[in-house]
Length: 190
Image 1 (cartoon, rainbow, N blue to C red):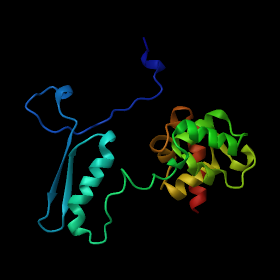
Image 2: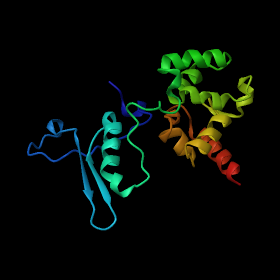
Image 3: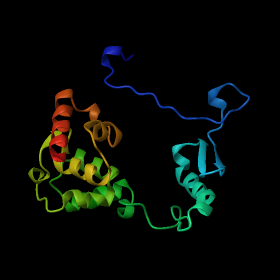
C-alpha cells in the first residue's frame, strides 16, 4: 500500500454530468447537451460532455452559432486538414521522424516531444545541432527553447502553466527548479 508520505502529487478532476433521477454518479450519462440562449447576445451553454467527444461537440456548437457568425466556415475537424503537429502520424511514427531529425535528443525528451508536439518539434529544433543549442535545462529535460515555444505559441505565462497545464513535468522537478524556470520566464518578458 502507498503511504501518504510517498504521494508526490494529487489532483481532483471535476466533470459536469447531466442530471438524472438515479443519484449514483457512476450511472449518470456522460453525454452532453447544448442550449442556445438567443435573447440578446447569443450565449451557448454546454452541459456535460467528456474529452473524447470534444470535436463533435465543437462542430455542433458552431452549427448552432453559425447564424450569428456570418463568416464561419463549415465544420472541418473530422474530415478536414489534420491538426497541427499530426502530419507525422501517431506518436510512434513521430518518434521515428524526430529520432531521424535529432539523434542526439535524449530518449525521454524525444518521446515527450513526439507525443506533445508531433511535427511541431521541428520548430523546437530549428538550427539546433546539439542539446546545448536548446538552452538552459531547468530540469526533467525541459530546456529554454521549449519554454520559449510554449510562451510564443501556446500562451504559457508562468512556470505553473508549463509544468502543470501543458505538461506534468512538475512531478519531476523540485521547487528550486520551478522557481528558476519562473525567474527565466519573468526575465524574458522584460
